[in-house]
Image 1 (cartoon, one colour):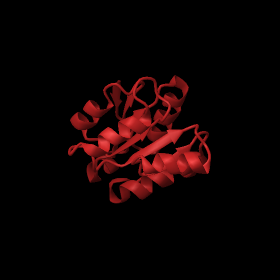
Image 2 (cartoon, rainbow, N blue to C red):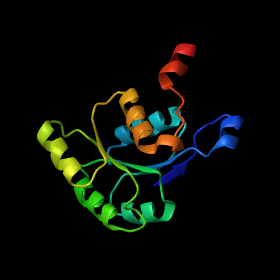
Image 3 (cartoon, one colour):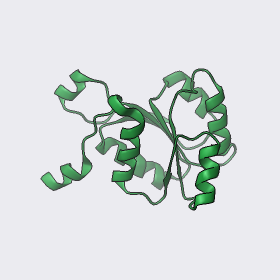
Image 4 (cartoon, helix red, strand yellow):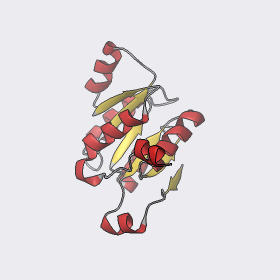
Length: 152
């Protein structure tokens, strides 16, 4: 697990602290991709590659949002989200399933388990940004990665 802060302009740092997002993903490439995406969006994040301490990390750091893979070794994402939603310190934290499990039936099962939203791999950066914006409302003022790319 590691904690990282993204690059932000001085004026944005002064106006508000960017949201803290906990990423739980066991595949290094997917973890790296999510961390790059969150950095582009101006978020702070904590990365974990296993689910064993997710509940403890969520209690300690109180992230604004959790991006949670479903197919994890040990405790899978469905079990983790059930525990998170039953803990008084973490039940309010929005949790997004980020998974390769596609299809309407899997999506319904995932949402019924307690996830607040669902993002199917592979995903577009704009889809990730839209979900984060919707769930974090006023806590999140993203840099539009698309606009940054157009400006270059």
